[in-house]
Image 1 (tube, one colour):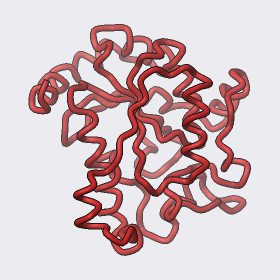
Image 2: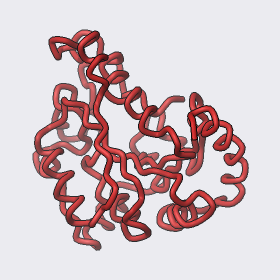
Image 3: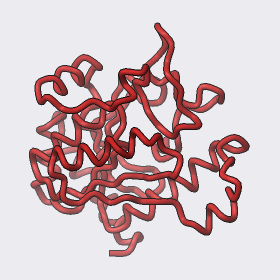
Length: 237
């Protein structure tokens, strides 16, 4: 399926999805999406970050063959790469796709590796947005781990939406979950914790643009703290 066909089919399916999955969230929404008419055509996009184990565990409990897309930007913490490998083994995930930036884009725009310092939005674009758009070709939708408690543009997050550019379905099964809900599920399932969480990183992205948060700060205060920026760009409004 080419990207034009994928966009057409997903746009048609959005109204259907909103009606078919109305009121569903969490595991119920995931089960409906991964075992129904869209089975095999929806991917989970995971950063393997601070809260990722919960959603990965839910998906694995339904179908370990679900495609998992991991954006290896080349700027991630070594701890994140090790954590990814640990979770893949722990959960028995069978189709984890490591997606990297186009080498030609890196050579053209970030030859010295310091684009994050000079133009952070462009750095995110070539290292995350463009690679993800390519990786999602052939799918009709994808699953995100965003939650409303994270604030900003996420405060009014619906459980089912569509990407305004590609038209692909976006499912946010944990949209209404609280931080305590996440922690309770992780403890209940005895899931391993990202090693940076214990060092004060409640939200983890690329190493140059992520710092530990201070007491009393928002959970995402350590992301792009030095810029007027709260999202990497893969979640377009």
